[in-house]
Structure formats: C-alpha cells, structure tokens
Length: 383
Image (cartoon, rainbow, N blue to C red; front, top):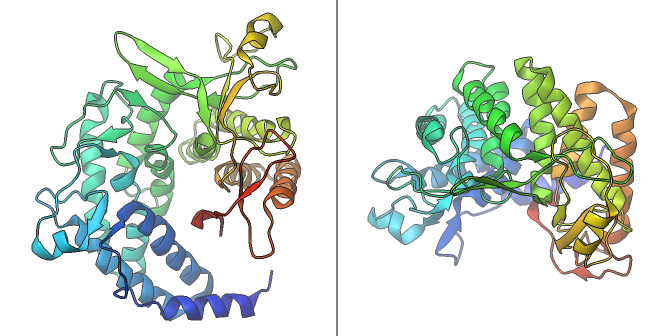
C-alpha cells in the first residue's frame, strides 16, 4: 500500500515507548505478548527497523520475568510487586490458552536475537501440555481451564472458543515456525484434531443444505454432550485445519478447513448487516452429512426472528474480530481460488460500512439489525 510515511510515524512512536513508565500494578501476560510483543516483532520483520526489535527485546525481557515461579509456568497476570518479591505462582484455574499462547512470539524473539532463553521459557509450557494431553476428561484435548500451579487437570468443558482457542491454533503454526524440527507439535495437533472432529464438529440444518461446518463445545459428565452454541472466535479453526492438513498431508483436514471457513463466510452473509454475531446457535444435523430442513423443528426455537437455521444470537455484537477473515485469507493462499477473494471482499465491505468512524473503527451492538449502533471500543487486534 506504500504507506511509508504513516508506518514511519507509528514506528517512531513505538520506539519512544518507555515500558517502565506506568501506573499499572500488573499486566495481562497473554494480551501483552500477543498484541504488543507480536506487533513489534511483525513490524520489525516487515521493515527491518532495528529500533523495533530493540523495543521488542526490552518488552520480552520484562515478560520473561513472569516465568519466575516455582515450576517455571507463568501466571495469568504479571504482578510487578510479586515479581519484585519473588512471590509469583502459576494459577490454579487459568485459561488454558493464556500461558499456552506465548510460544510463537517468544520463539520468534529467540530466533531474531539468537537468545534461546525466550524459546526455552515457553517450551516448558509445551512440555506440560504434551504430558497431560491424553489424561484429560476428553483425552486428546485440553479443557478451557487448567491448574498450572499444580500441573493438574480438573475442568470438564472443552472448546475452541474463548479461553482455549489459540492453544490449538498455534500447533500447526509452531510446526511451521520451527521448520518441523520439533515433531511434538505435529503429534499434539493430530491427536487434538481427531477428538475435535469426533466431538465438537457439526453440520447445521439449513433450508438450502449448504455444505458448511461449525464448532460447538463438549461437556463431559456421565457422557460427552455437544453444545451447538458457536462463537466468532472459533472461526480461526478453518485456517487451522487447512494449514494442518497441508503441512501434514491430511486431505480430510483441508476439506474440513474449507467447510469451516465457508461456514463462517456463510454466517456473515446470512445476517442483514453482512456480519456474523459474536455468539450464536444453530440446529445441528445428526451427522456431518446433509440433512433435510425441518421447519417444525427449527421455528419454535427461533425467538429473535433470525435467518433460517439460527436458534439464537445470544451475543449479537461484532467486536472487530479477525478470525473469520484470517481463515478466508489462509484458504485463498492455499488454493488461489478467487471465490475466497470474493468472500473476503463482501466481508470487508460490510465491516467498513457498519464499523467506520471519523477516527478508526468501532464495535457494533447488534448485527441482526441494519439499525445497529456503534460502541466506543476497538480491539487492538483490529489495528
């Protein structure tokens, strides 16, 4: 896009950041890593501006302190006072994605600085995940929350949505980042993917029988129960399956990835704004094959006058999520099929139409109505 002046202005501002100048008493380790550290590393790789790598290294050194716990697994928060006093401990009920999703940024920082300590720190988390993967209540998957302090598993809910998403997303990406040198990422991906396909994947009952898939949650009690409530966050899985399928030669996964990505694209187009909601529910077919549309089964469950197939949109907001468009982008990169460009363009136009402001973009309250209002909020991931 040749926006060099704008980039240079932003890079100069980033290079002037003083990480020590804050009134906060703690920072969210996960968010600071994937947003701030990840953004600096990406900006450096695009520009090769040394000041950006220097600033990323400064931040990485600060975040590295979070691993100073008795078992070297970090907590959800990096509390500055606890760190100073040597009192940090890992959490006993933390989101599984939190300590598990630091690995790409820390690995890339090690690669760029030739300092292995950052990779080594997050590799300890990977070894923990590998060790417990087959001993959870749904063997092969990790639950939404884990006891990192005692290195134990208690939770019975399994999801690719909030609290767990990027743990799974990063498995094939880490394999690629390491050039396949650590075979454990392939092992972990294959094992998890088999369970996801068996227990979380579903095909919705739709009037036109579109060949699309979505992901729900699994809860383990006396039996394994599927909740078909789906989240925008899970839209990353289309790209994950497609990338994993290509990297590891699993054609079934490429097909599943395409159907998942197509599902999110279809969900965007189904609503009057051209944008899908944050959380919604669909009527599931008995299998992943097509099933007949049943108006009688669907209609009594639709209380919000939603498009056919949708039972509810429990959270009708759009908060500038990137997961769906990322999967569409990955599908285009893998296939070079122009249909993905067309889908992405439709999604982009709808997002611009309903989220644009004079300064930037804003979340919207209700994608089920063209009369929706904006919220004074913009996620860092959108920028």
